[in-house]
Length: 88
Image 1 (tube, rainbow, N blue to C red):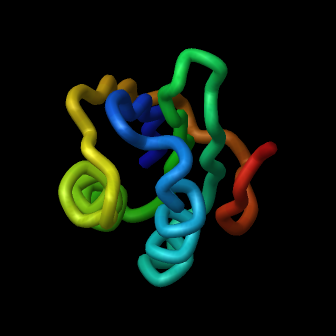
Image 2: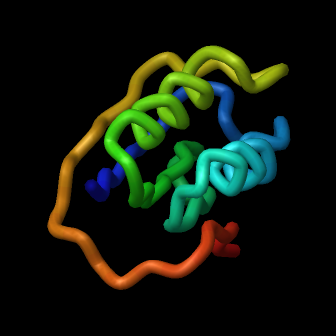
Image 3: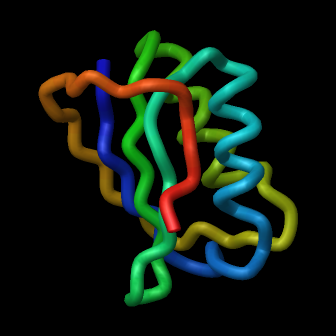
């Protein structure tokens, strides 16, 4: 399964991308995460459906100093992704 997610709120400048990358690797997920100009963070997450949802849950409630006030999820056709990285 592959899911594109946009996280809104206090998600930049708090280690959100690095913590997301670390957790994704621990869950054996592939994809990427990046900051967007509007202050949100976008992630493309690919892997086992339960682990994808676990990462999204982690991002919305367990990253210190962040506050996700809204998110948008869209399930998309799978691409050929490798590992999980931060896009700058």
